[in-house]
Picture: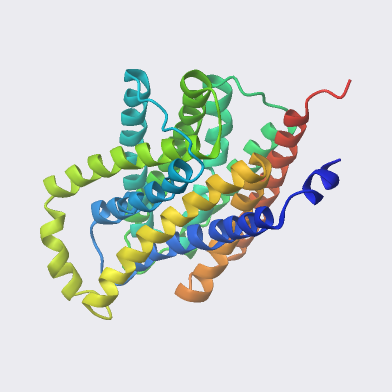
Length: 333
């Protein structure tokens, strides 16, 4: 039945799906690597790199225009509760980006990526308590497995710490990465709650609208933080001392902003065109892709413990996806 369903899909559908999958598998890892490159080449501001993550929100906003003008869909009316939910999610998203910025400042990109995969654990837990999503044995197994992978990285922390990073800084990066993953899981659950309670539908343009509004408020909150911290003023001196020059500095920031938004667009399209399960599979795949790319491009140390953690993480994702697909299908009788 699934084969027949997809066989009837037109060629434009497959072109769009392939492009969306490509965006997820290329843009998200690229964004993570560019964040690490910023700090590796002399960048210092956690606020700037977290601001960059949401500075590209107009890219997503522009993608809504064809939906409004060509498909003639109507924008979702902004009620008080919906606007308030966007403000809260925007604030949490700004805080989440800042936490991940601290992680990429002190951790190798491969380690930060592996730790960030723990957001799946928190998504499942918060989803269970907030949205009343079901948990089964496979999902619980995934939580235990991925937790074990994170513990393995913690036990092997001495093998991948940069020489210019102190023990305290490495520990802080580790903690902020886990806290950021926990907050990411909470944001995911709260976003789902907004759909269930306030929006009641999951069309492509509605999902994009939520992403645009949350990114807009995150951009506002982060911009305030950058201004208060006076980091905009420091960009010029930071660019002058950046490895490979000022042009390289601004290109890193611009492409980090663009790739992050392309990843968001790709993920949204995959969710709409295919399923949450496929999006989960792609999320699982991009973790090793990011780690391998970091080893090749940045020469990140890859110890036996980290390789084992990578394999275990992949196994955990597989278990979670299997459990989710069983829940989605429901009882067969």
